[in-house]
Length: 154
Figure (cartoon, helix red, strand yellow):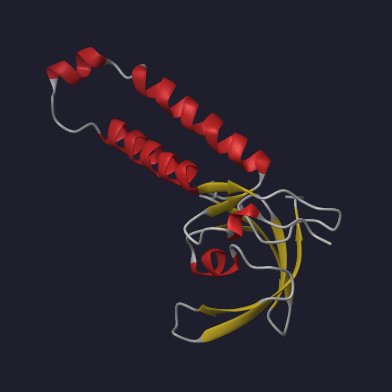
């Protein structure tokens, strides 16, 4: 039996694996450390908005918000009870099975990874094996996805 997820307790929580939580915390730490290294003299000379600083600040705010909502989902003997950021999911759309890794924000060029804020990612996040979700496609059609398996392999 999969472990009972703590993330289902409050709907506004963001289910994440322990490994993904640590990775997000490390990313936040690196961004904060990098922000302090941006040249303060350049900022004093040109007080206009610095695109690099704005991008870093935006990402820091996104990570802080996600970490404030994060609820760690731990696997039980049979794996994860629900799809969480950091898990790999196998879904079936009735024609074909696809494997995705759920991420807060996929890296550019990373294949097989779905953002938790995308239509597919947000529909799957927090769902249990056997659940069927409906996803709106860009062309307006709907697609049903059945969650076949949840694991921690990437």
